[in-house]
Length: 315
Image 1 (spheres, rainbow, N blue to C red):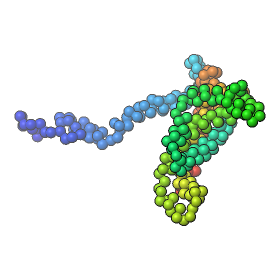
Image 2 (cartoon, rainbow, N blue to C red):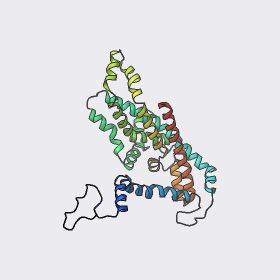
Image 3 (cartoon, rainbow, N blue to C red):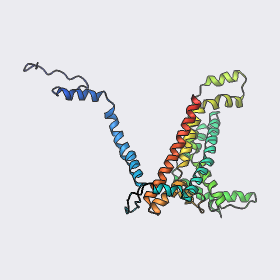
């Protein structure tokens, strides 16, 4: 029954559909009001545009012989993948990437934990320690490389001058195959340890104080409290830091590209740098995409293994 002429319009319920809409539209309005889809739609559009579509496009590209200038594009099946698995440079650069990951992950976890514990013990001037440890992480990679390039200079670099004070000969930090990877590792540890330090420091501050008080009442010293209270409480944080660090080290590119360009020889060339060279210097987009997807499978496998180990430990 319709409202009589001249009668005041029924007030609209807050958040409800406007009066006068057909029944089907009103039901759709109420259903959408209870659904999170309108809030997720902008994210899903951006996610699809910038992640899903490039992933699918790259996957298709890996099965073609398309070049950087758009030439080619014929479907070649798994030919690129077969070539990648037999390419010695793929295995050499993958070995460099794994070596870099091993050399950086351990110190970036251990040193970050030591720095956080040191600050948490109540050193005077804590703000200065926190700033000093975290500040390098805020620097752009170009600045970091510029500073460390100056330190590594063979003739007048600070490191070789320091060696000279002890009567030792200077090293070719970036030009000798035996030291180039260590130089990249040293630069990376100095640059990025602040992020892990911040994670550990936040985790340390969340440990309940009564655990330390109970341990002290039981006669536990500083080392025993660290071993039996602090480290067990940091187990979850360590798992997260370890996973993030391994993934970050596997995709190393910037500092190697700017410090050594992959040299000398192939001593520091990472797999991502090789993929870049194949695609943008060798113009082989299809082959570069195939190597990229093989590397993606490796990274996903490492992440899945780490999550599986963490889940088993929690279980």
